[in-house]
Length: 268
Image 1 (tube, rainbow, N blue to C red):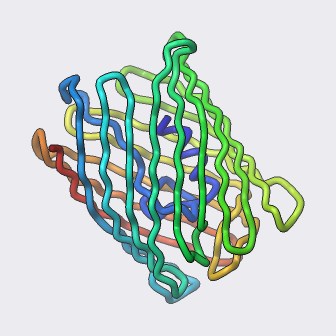
Image 2: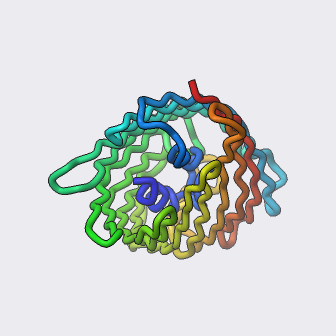
């Protein structure tokens, strides 16, 4: 379900997350291949800094994250985060879950994001999706992502297809966005590649198209977007890992954004 989450967020753009989005949460990363099949609890904290070449304003993020993963594939993820962007400082809280199913074979994904008093990022957002796994390493994703800003609401419908090659996964996705304050549909398409090595989980995402983005206080509109993101979770030993993430995101006619993130993860 990581692919679907990325696809849904892609039409909107996170600070640590893959490419375009006003929902700045880190890329979910599966444990490395050598992890034993037992319940796993991870804690992570970190931050990011961004440079906007059209707006000489701060865009800084600090986050704390807690993850639980069961051998069955069931997962819970909670993130608390503070963003300083476009002259405002706001806290956000996100809870997501993955629930594996056997008939059909796949993963049901759901999430909720709450950011009280926010005039830049969504005040409330939620997502629901399904990752259907079929034979031959193929998978198909479907999802819906709803974001409520202070002045408008945005809806995203996502579809995707991926192929698993041993420890690698290549996915194509498309996200269709509508905005409550105007007519028309925006489309963002992208590719996502990931690999899980003995001590590294690497994710690379790129996307382009027309999607919904916030460009300031109470300013939400449809824009031409392009984004690229590369992230690595590297395990130093069986209990400690470092996350690094860097990306570029362009909102046509508004700004270009360069960001870098560093985080520390501890396995209990």
